[in-house]
Image 1 (cartoon, rainbow, N blue to C red):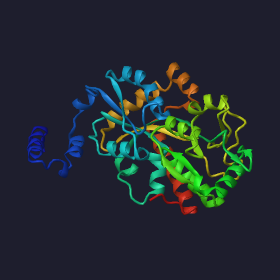
Image 2: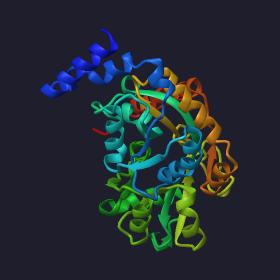
Image 3: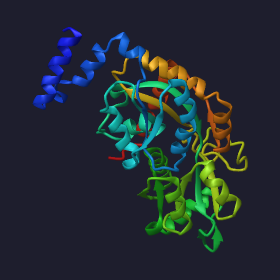
Image 4: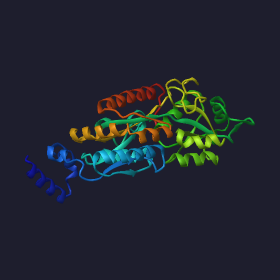
Length: 340
């Protein structure tokens, strides 16, 4: 079908209200010619974030906006779509037009954990996304309020926390913004017998506020969200999800040191686009992102946030996603963990 004939048929189908059912978005991507790709981008690009403004992934996304905008020659706008553990944003981008104007800032939970713990998902990372570039990674900390006590003493170790949860099951809960948090806690529950109820949140700020006022027992926090409260003595960090101790908080043990070597999340964050996005557009985004992650101001900003900027090729990011997906699938199977 010629380009002009395709456009005519597509227009007629849209007028009849049946275009989406016949996959016009996919057909457009397949017929988009070199001229369209060479002119990309010709309008603003949306960077979709599945968390509220102020959350760590939102902050990291905004840190790359200036450099990415400059290199693409068009404004890059952050579009927050929080809710359902970032599932709303994930589904939105999976169904978006594959034209390079809708990008997803994808955490580990979106690309690797969700498929391992949900029998049914509204999207499939392999089927619906094309990896573009790994931005970087970070670790999280399991934290409790300094006011939390067990048998009259402050809870300062994981062992004390588990005992506190077992003896007070009606108060054993935790704040979760994504399935990675749920997965770790579900595995802990399976291994220790301490059951924790999930309380969903849209941002780290909401989670921290609920931790401080005693509404939740546990919160998983990134360094940026945790550091000021830790210095003020209002919270305690009991463990880190990193594969090794963090240089920012070297006194905090890893889950591996506490007997759970498979419970680590060097949480990766990357950029993915709808699957049928033209290769030339993905390559242009890959180049722009890799360069942006080396900008001195981005490197410094990520360091302040307690994260490690990386920037990678599309190929390397795809391999990392595949490896992480296999690891989480194996862990979920070994511990019989499902979150449906």
